Length: 144
Image 1 (cartoon, helix red, strand yellow):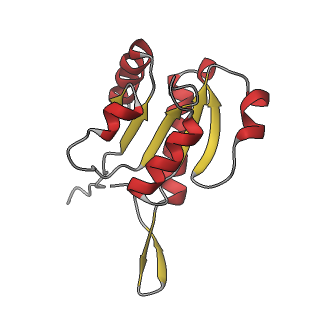
Image 2: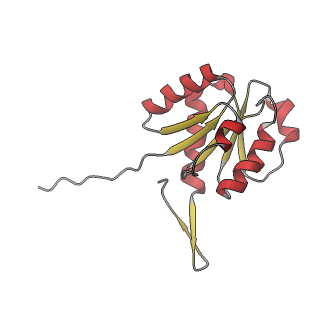
Image 3: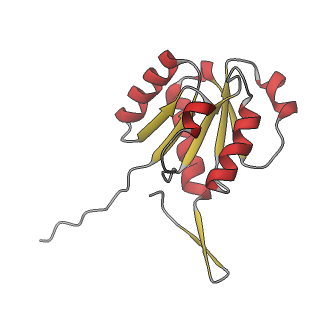
């Protein structure tokens, strides 16, 4: 009898958060779930990246010090196009949501929900929103 195997493709997330401790904890949680994570502690650090890497989802902290996650989302969209963005913050949803305009920000998750919850939301966006347009036909594609 022949064994059938399902090929799974690792997801690749980008995290921009000015808290190095949070980034380290998040990186550990992502690794546990088989997710490749690249993180930067500032928009400037991210901007110095040599060449853009293809990501499935971007996770942005709302309070990045010199800029907000909303500003960063605009920059990220300029680099990557219509990539799903998850906005995270220690602040409450009520404080942040009125400031969020649609665009690339698809979800808001409080950091207090935990890394696994943030990752679950990001994975769901990756699965449900990854599309490739070819000759006017929109095809659902798995996360690469």
